[in-house]
Length: 481
Image (tube, rainbow, N blue to C red; front, top):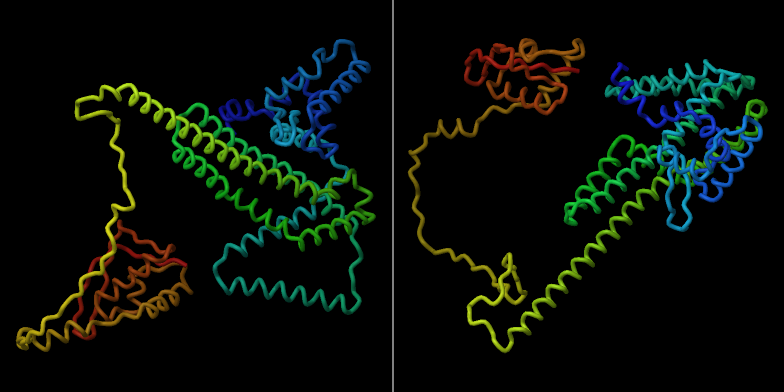
């Protein structure tokens, strides 16, 4: 983070600007109390205005006079213009509603994280990091032996644990570890809901861009649809979009929902959790996740609905214009019906229309049958090509590509990479140039192989059938694990 990044990217961010405002205590405390404390996503205009008016009255009565002199509607309009609130009209109501923006939620989360937790778990976090790193290493390897080794290790640990439980050796419940894991789940769930707000706003940005193109640009339907679908596909084909789709499919599973409900009920009744539990956020996590995911899908559906309405209106306007043109042509025809034009051209069009009638298409006709003439055939000259030439044509050396791959893998067991010269030194070329070409064909299909054009290597080539040996210079070929 250099000086220009802080100046041009960080400071203009709405979350940072919120913290720098003079009335930041009013904004953050009121919006947190109304939205976050009550686990609410949308609040109607009338309700939020009344709540802010009461809150302003309370602050003025308990502080110096003249504090926050503006009215509640003026404050809400200003916060909306500053990007701290989003005001919109839902499809099912004529009354506007307010919603927190991702920038405001980030500022609230940052302030909430400033409070020193009474209990800070370090062991569970370290174990979590250790587990994630092992998962990454396990998922990234392509070696079946390493995967089997890890699976066997996990299998042995599970079998040992089963034997301990069967023998009656059950570890005492660790209250400290339960608290650590509970706080980790709490913080992860809170960040997850905040991320859903950002995904929802990404869809809203696409929707806004589409509406602006409809208003400011006279695009054809095909061009507009192409740009919209490209933007939509770009969002869904990102890692973020694919992760959300996988999350939504997992959450919609009734089996997973029942399992999550049972786990939440079990965890909430633990005495260790009751000691540190501050609110019912975890108890409502399933409902909150479903609502957040549903809002993302509804935003995407709103974009599709907006496109459909635009195309309907576009088709209506085009049909209306076509009717107007037809009526203009009819009016011109009525004017000249008593005195028709004598020229060859009665009406000129900007472009010649292409008319293809069904009756203009030719009927099906069966293809002509090829007739073979019964003519005699003469025997050719057998001496044109000698028998030795036929043998050279058909007796080409066969190169076993699988055998070449085995040779490469055998050498790579001891080395991280080998060159083609090292391979041919260990396994001499016996079938001529075709065998070397086969090695290059294997490398071209292997992403881990490298063909270095900057370095040249001489390879000894032998052909056991012709008893010939010669050296050929090739670009350096490197096989890697």
